[in-house]
Length: 128
Image (cartoon, rainbow, N blue to C red; front, side, top):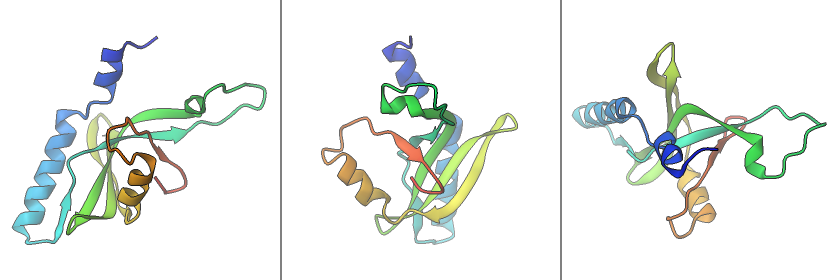
């Protein structure tokens, strides 16, 4: 069983990833681009292959987590796209960039109107 501290550390964005995002934001501002990246990242979960002979008592039993982090590309404070940073070949890099994200903040507000809950971001068929 995982302790609360281990779980908190597992959900903490690695410093190397945060630095990548900061560097991109600097590059965007130097290029006088209208985009910026929200530095609050979300751990990405994926759907497991299920076994019809197995029972899944909790919905979270159907997810698995990888060392992937979703960030929102913003334009004028609105979600416009997504960037996924993850570990590949031993180092962090941008895995996916520019997928539609215009509904992300709206969906997040519906999932957690208070903005205080621990929200699980699930990737399925190119959507979050």
